[in-house]
Image (cartoon, rainbow, N blue to C red):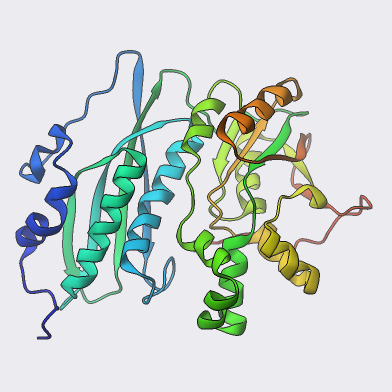
Length: 330
C-alpha cells in the first residue's frame, strides 16, 4: 500500500478529519452518537435538502479535493437559499474507493472547514463507507425559516416577472470547452469560467430577502430552461424568455460572439446555482433594492404567461428553436 493510501478505519477517519468540523455545534455530540440534535427558534420551522455528487459526473477526478468539498456544500446551501432559508448545519456521507489517499481527505476536510467559516455552518453527523465504485459524496443541508415563509416552485402566476441573479452559462460553457479544447487550455485561457463551475456562490442573502416577495423560486442547477420548466409545471403556467436579457459574463459574451452555438450552454447547460424566481410586477422596485443591498446583479429576463411550455425569443421577437432542454439525471 502506498504511503498516503487509506490505512485507518472509519472511526480513525472521523477522529482525524471530521470531528474538528463538528466541535462548534453541541448538537453534533462531537460525532460520538448515532443521532445529532438541532433546535430551531420559536416561530420557525426546519427545512432540509440533499444533493449527491459522483466522480466523473459532477466533478472530475483531478479537480482539487478542497474545491470539490466546497462545491458539495455550496450546491446544498443553494437549495436552502432557493427556499428562502437560513443554513444551520449539515450531514455528510462519503463513499470512497478502497485504498483511498489520506492526503485527498485532508484537503477535502480543509475545504469544508473554510466554507463552514464562510457560511457559518457546521457538521452535525454523517457516514463513511468504502466501495469498488467512483467517489460518491452526499450532503443533507439543514436550515430554518419563519413558518409559512418557504418559497415554493408552485406559486408563479400569469403576469409575473421572471428574474435571475448573477450571470448565466459560465459553468456550462467551461464544461463544453473542456470537451472541445481540453482541460489545460480551458484553465489557462478561461480561468473565470472554471471558477464558476467549481465554486458556485449560493445566494443565501437574496433567498432570505425574497421570502415574502417572490411567488416562486428555484436554483439553476439543471439549466435555465429546465429549471424554469420546473416552476411552470408546478405552477401550471407557461413562460416567455427574452434571449437578449439573459445576463452573461464578459468572458461568456466574448465566446458567444465568436460562436453562437454556445448559446445552448447558456439556456440549456446548468451548474449556475443562481436563483431563478418570479414576482409580481409591483415588486420591481423592491427587487432592485435587494440587488443594491447585496451588491449583486438581478436581471428581469421574461414573464409568466398562460398556457404551457416556454418560448425563448430573439431580439426580433422570433422564437428560437430549443436544442438543449437542460441536464437529465436519467
